[in-house]
Image (cartoon, rainbow, N blue to C red; front, side, top):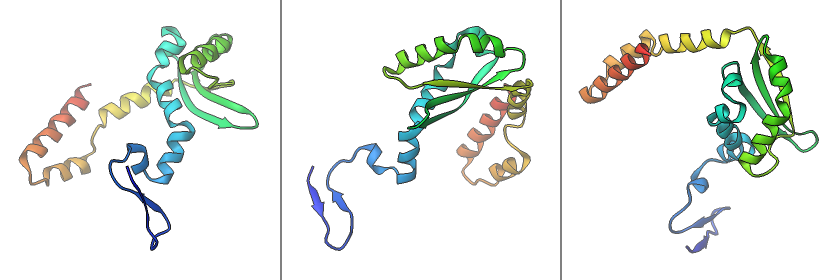
Length: 159
């Protein structure tokens, strides 16, 4: 891979194959480097990290990393189950740090909700595609794409 310095442009360009990370915009790189990978891995492995009982009543809301206060994971907990999660905070921190291989989380903050989490899930599934989106789908000229999108809509509504 040869580096080429353009005199007319500010940036240097690279000839040859580029990695995927180099092709992303600057804003996307910042988000991925800051918290994207840690938060997405935490979401994917939440059931393993907290266990089956706490998985049903909690989910990670956000991940914040600051130099002064350390890193903090905000967790949404269903009302009435705060005590269970409070007692297992240290265990969750330990599991997360072992899972990632370094100290990812220093603190966990809990926020409660009334149980609307389940209702939100149900509403999203029932309203998979709105009527205006169905109208746009029917306006598509390619029959294969139109059929596949309508089938996808049926699958989401059936769940």
